[in-house]
Image (cartoon, rainbow, N blue to C red; front, side, top):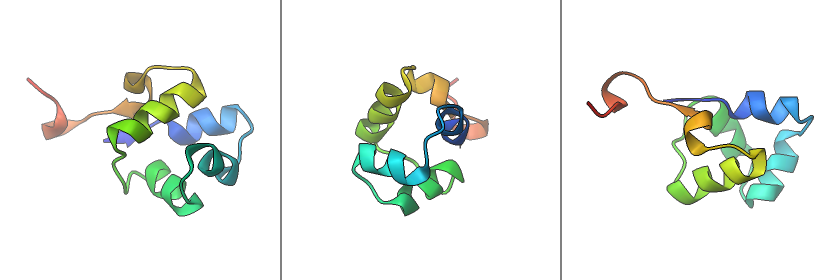
Length: 69
């Protein structure tokens, strides 16, 4: 799974620390999300979508065997 979190964050001139504070997570969690090293919970994904004013599907790109056929 790839994400568009970094793209959305930088477009809004938001730092990783600012996003982490809004999500109530550590900066390391934001880094891991942006580097596709961590898959967020449904609640965290929903919070991200709310912050960026988009749908969860707009933030997360599923590839390969993650897709439902």
